[in-house]
Every structure is written in C-alpha cells, then in structure tokens.
Length: 341
Image (cartoon, rainbow, N blue to C red; front, side, top):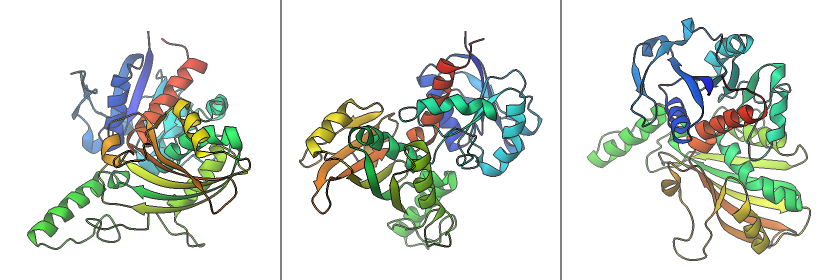
C-alpha cells in the first residue's frame, strides 16, 4: 500500500535529497519515478541508500496520468511548463520553485506552521514549498507568535552556497583551491568572490533597494504565518557549503521572557533547542547538515525595545529549506486527503 510518486529534477541537489528523505522517512511508495531534462535521460540514480537504482526518464515525454504526487525541483521556467500538465492529469504537484508561492489560490505550506492551509490545494492541484530561509524562520517563530503575538521581525541571513545549486558549491570549492595555490579566483556564478568573503546580495535587486530574496522572506512569512507581522530582511551569501543561519530580532505585543521562550521552543514541533550560555553551547551550520530539525540557540532578551527577543536559527537548507519540507507536505497531503493505492 502506498502512493505513486514522481521526483522531477531528480539529478539535482534538491532532487537527490528528496530521494534520500523519501527513503529515510520510509514514505509509503507503491511506485517511484525519477524524471529530469533530456540530457539526464537514461542515467541511473540511487533511491537513497536502499540500493535500488532508478532510470531517469525525460520529463518532456513523461506521462503524468495515474501518478499521485510529484515533487518538483526543476526551477521556475520548467515548472511553468510541466506543473500545469501534471496537475491537469490528476497528479498533485508539490513545487520547490518560487513560481506559485504568492498565487492566492495555491497553498504555501510549512507543515509545523500552517497545515490547515493545505486543504485549498484542490483548486489548482498545486502546493508551493517556501523559500529555504523563510521555512526555517517560521518554524522557529510560529510557537512564539502563538504565545505572545509577533509585531515585527528583523532578520539577517547567512546563506550557504548550496542555495545557488551545484554551480555555487563548485565555485566556492574552486575559488578556495585557487586562492591557496595563488591562482585567480574569478567569480562566475556569484557577483563577487565568495571564498573567504561574504556577499550581501541574493537574487535580483528590486526598485526599493531590497533584493528578491529579501522580498520573499517578507511576503512568504506573512502568507504562511500572519499578514499583520512586519518583516525586514538582509540576505547574505556566505562561504559555507550547506546550512543556512539566521540572526532574528523579534518584537512582541505581549511580554515574553527568554526563559519562557526557551520552554516553548523546547516543546515546539520541528525545533531543536540547543542553548547553553557557554563556549560551544550553540549550533553552527556544519553541525546541522543531514539533520531534519531547525536548531535554535542564543535566545536572549533585547533591552532596546519593549517585549523584544533575539535568537540564532540554523537549518540544513537542502532539507528543511527544500526537500524535507516537500516530503513533509506530501506526508500531510496523504494524511488529510489522499488514499493509498
């Protein structure tokens, strides 16, 4: 008993992680298909660590009829073509791109935060996965919002190069190696050198001076959690391979002590609180790689505003920020709506 599942973009970073997580979480699968662009057709890809090999099929010729769920990790341009085709064939699309996130008739879901919103998926048979930096932040914010009502959030992100795909990871590796041997470290994927540097620029610049990545964090947080919450973000690319970090400053309507916030976070779904006020008593990106949780550390009161807290938040962006959240959406969809074959 299980579902017929398609992973679209199976050969990319996020697609491979989707396959890993489906296997790790023992998602109920009756049949599994890996699809990608024509250049990957015929390649073999492993289903997690099960030893089962999947032959990659060409998305251009794939027949979506009879499939239950498709996890999409193919970028907005390809999604625009193939998601409506899959959805029209009766296959529910869970999309990792930004294409549908702000469409009013497409649910934008983080299962720990707004599971009830998934009930609206039938309008277009498409569900959107949020931006990686938004996903981990709202997991940490929602239980605190429920307790004391958040008025305003100021967040600075420290985003790993894997958020820019394999090309971003390759560029960090190659530039680091070149610098050590005295060769030039010319940027290709990024706008400036990323090795031993930070770049306060992710995605395109908008007319107001913010970047699209920063805009995503604002509007997605409002859609997922509460439209009344004010959010401002500064998104920075850092020379880390995997794992996004965030320094989050929160202003509440009601008083919430750091101690009470720690108690709430300790019990919150999807959150792992690691907060010892000592050397090493916090989580860094290196330690969160391969993990499911959103880690929160350094919870403390902000004395510069009434009812203010500050915290540090870290998560594996290929997991909670992308593949894991997509699989969790599929699990939620199965529990609430779909019948197993």
